[in-house]
Image (cartoon, rainbow, N blue to C red; front, side, top):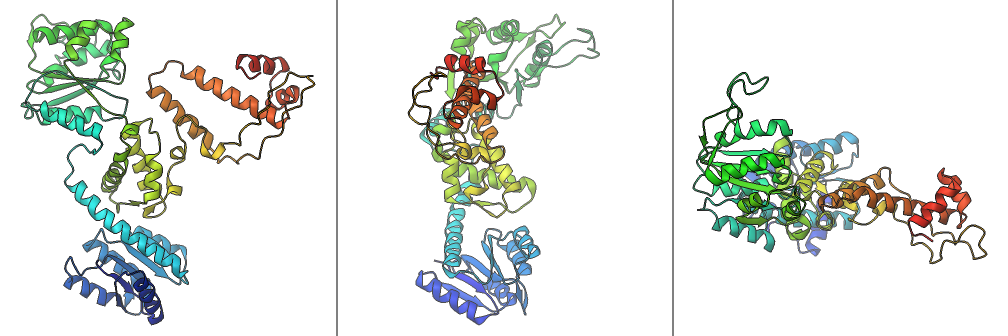
Length: 497
């Protein structure tokens, strides 16, 4: 194992750290000033270079922050722990802005310092492996069996021009798969043109797809080529095909059947040499049964179907994807990539991700900007990640309700016992939980989300109020700001009797 380099002009600090690390079977090499470190780094090879660097800030031979800056220029992936007896804001900010792994104020607790160094060593080793994977990573990532099936399908389809239907929840990466199908097909040298049919108003979609002739309608000052013509010799990706208006479905079917189309207002047929790949998050078979989607078009598009798994079905890919997105985000923002602890990765992997891979990418972008340290811990994760889909937010969960029925007003039965002490909600936590649950239900394709969430919200609110008032309905109604008849009716409607 490569040694841990310690830089401090204080001989006692070096001695204490050396002995403590030796007991942990971690090799060390010590220096008294930054100049010695830089000379040693220039002379070191991959085997005898440092695993991590632990440096003081203020030394007679130079500044630890200057050393940090020079080390990061030559070895950007090397974790650096900054120590200082001057625990001021400027030192901490400068250390983290310079890319320090962690900031360790003196005097430090030795066991905690050793624990921090060991964590940096583990992170260093893990990041070395992760960086190798990311460097060699293709346009899509995934080790889960479900994603490997997708990769195999793309491989089998690489020399084919067959029409493909990609299904999967929003945010699973359907356009990435479409691009991969195009990139590895005989049409790779042609254009890849994508259009989201749900994002374009119905009256403009026809012109977007097929183009229009000059004077075809008010505002058509010139002839315009549509997406089919723009994709000539390449691939046209029709995203959210399930939302295409019914009359346009007929025109699309005709193009797929005979390979010709007419521009809006045109009289001359235009030949379409285009491979069509369609995608949807909807259940098209159900849409066909409802009469909202043409059955013949469905069969024409559904020649080969690729289903993309939701992220919750491939949780083992979360760590790899998170590290990839953190690297990507840092590159876009021009900052040092942040690292993420095993505990934070475990919490991420346990999250339901209603927004799938796109949501994970957004979370990583948020963490790159908002996480306070270079190492991301569970406490740094955004509030919604603490909420398991289908549950109340962790910050607002209460103790179980007592096993006693809610009795009508005036009943001789004992009133409700007071509930156990409740957790104090973090500001905005329950809204984040509500948002996460709503995203989960919406992504599942349900059409009663308003009713379902309203029923659960009202039930929890009324039961909590009754618990607070020991089962007294009139007092609970007063505290909630509703009428006595309203609370009685709600209890009956919601089955809370």
